[in-house]
Image (cartoon, rainbow, N blue to C red; front, side):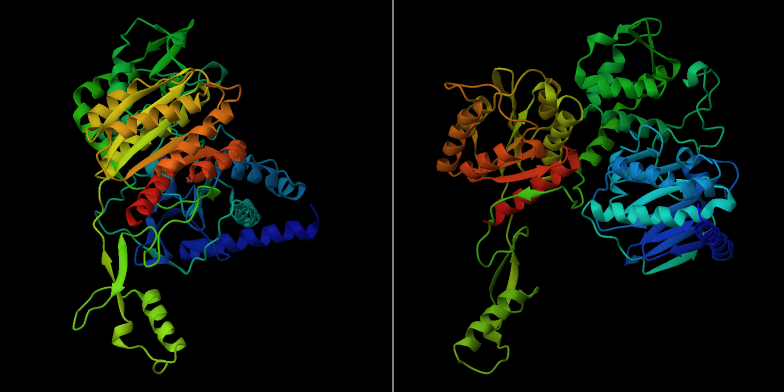
Length: 580
């Protein structure tokens, strides 16, 4: 590190320390806020950040006993998901630069820094598999959160780290956002800070000693009796996090019911679809593995008892989570044909019409009003002014329920998070709309109806529970089966067929080419005029683009199948169909 670089880092560090002690919070550059406290956005002023001075970040986030030990840094960006793994890699690479290494003097900052974005989080040097709770990810779709334990003399390194975060935000096709102002405020007496959306398990080393896991030989956690009692609210939140691994409270309860104290179950008896849940249960200390068998621990027994006693309440809260319509997020590149005719606002259930004589009206349709006036001006009729007969207003259109059929690829490559995302989508659509939903799956050499058109959540959950990933991808078989089913079962004049897949066809029917078989069915979809859409992954873009063109459907290419992204796309397509 040259003297100038080292000197600049030291100056930054002194300035941050002085400002933080004087004001309680510091704005760094245009995008970032640093404090030792909680931050909250001002609802009526989106550019303002409120700093809750008496809500210490270390005590609230990490249950530390002493205040002032944890630095809290937020870097703001436009609404969207920042890949936290890529971001953590950039941070670690930056901290390996000789100048910063010399400045940190061997301090392992990546071990004592946590990151959270809209895709997840955890310790920068850790597995980065934490922070997956829906409410937590949704809360971080407009900023990157960093928390760190850093000696006073080394705060200057935060400035170049902010620079690398801002660069990565722009590399990931989002924009950095300016903080218009900081308002430092004290918490009112007796006022509690609701952090339920932010609660989550993690591998953080910033936790207070009373929260840190005990470590046995090899660094693995072990669990002792006499542990601190867990509140009902904490048990409920943990149960909700676990339900997200299977997307069905009943299925989680059933899995726990299979375990009894002192009697193990072979780990190999569970399919790939349950790997994420079983791994999480072991990380939480609810299951332990011994000689190829999984055993229920004392902590696991407490969760089993909780599920038996509070199952109805768990179902209620899970339905509330499913019902939430996701924020509009950056879901990667998307290809679609334009829909919606003149006078229709795409994505809004409103239509522009002329204002009648003497009529009072609400919302003015500005583009249509100006277009009407421009046509009159161009014809030479009248002065360049607005007249009453130019006025157009927006009137709401009553949304008609749709029949939505989800055609889900259930081949082996869809195991785990991808299949869970599709299961989330089916339940979310049922609870957030008035539509009927059906689910058809295709795998190996079969296609079958998992859920017939219904408005019954229990019926949907029973059908989804039976879907297990396996085998190859018989796309043409699934498409033809679905077309036949829709023709004989739909009630609504408007039906939406959506294909969710992570691959390309690998099983042929009647020809030597699985791809040509699927394209032949795409032609049938186009002739029938069925509203069709497809969500797929980037490696398969070429085939899926041709398929969507042949079917005259809309194609969305995304980086990964995630429930919130699928839901946002389907809501967009529903709006397109309802205003046509």
